[in-house]
Image (tube, rainbow, N blue to C red):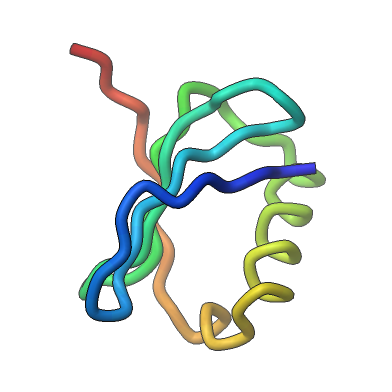
Amino acid sequence: MFKFQRIISAAGKWTDNLYFEKEYIGTMGLDEEGLWIKSKRNFTIGEMNLLLAQLINGNPNLSNEKMEILPFETL
């Protein structure tokens, strides 16, 4: 099960910390270009399916957004 922790939200855009079970795996958000995910690890197809189902269940309008998956960059 994925968990989300809202970091910032304004004008319909948002950024969340992303957890899988209790493990922090990255960040995700919605901006003017669409949905983006920055993850420290790759997802299985089942995990990606679960993540998308949770997101769309929480906000059905996300099904119309473009999505970009990016590598998590550490400083």
